[in-house]
Length: 138
Image 1 (tube, helix red, strand yellow):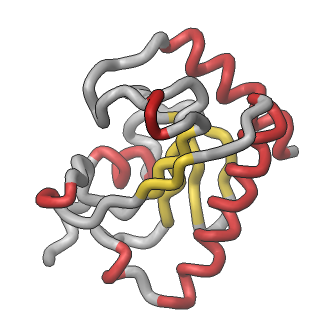
Image 2: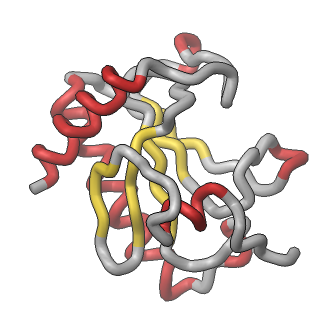
């Protein structure tokens, strides 16, 4: 596969597009999904140009999963949920819509999820949730 540096997540990483940031470190960025499948739906992406998990060098995997764990913990705490769906799609045939490796963290039961990428959420609500989650991570 050939990584496309013009994908939306690469543009977010470069600061060319805005996002509702939850957490950032030298290896990863966590932000809210603007097409949420449930309230509090977040994304965690590496700061490494990989389209799928198979393309991510192992030395970048541990820091990325550390961020995934941090965000999941704060979602459970702030949103008072018991479970978080962790979804990671590899390739368009698997349903991946942005060709940059990313993890979906969705605080809801599978049976309550909206369709993936179906509709844009309420930006004010998404921003407010991002602020609550980011504050809890500081």
